[in-house]
Length: 119
Image (tube, rainbow, N blue to C red; front, side, top):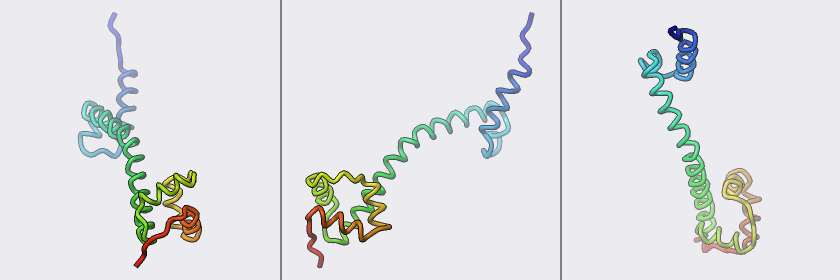
């Protein structure tokens, strides 16, 4: 007796096509191309969830470096001073403070005890 796969195949194909919504051309309409594209999109999503963490850390460091250069101190000396004083604020928090709460950030910088040679 043969196995008829009508409903099973239809459900599987429609599930893939639903994931392929927004793709262009045959990547959306034909199952084989949609399946390839959905699998590749999943690989990119998996990789980029990890890459996003790296990119944001780099952004926070860049912002902190800019904020500290305005005060005449390089970022590396600032981070070393934070570690020496056991201040455990992370880079994201410090970056947000530098942008949105400069007065509070100045207090943190004063607490570290480093002074800049601002011209």
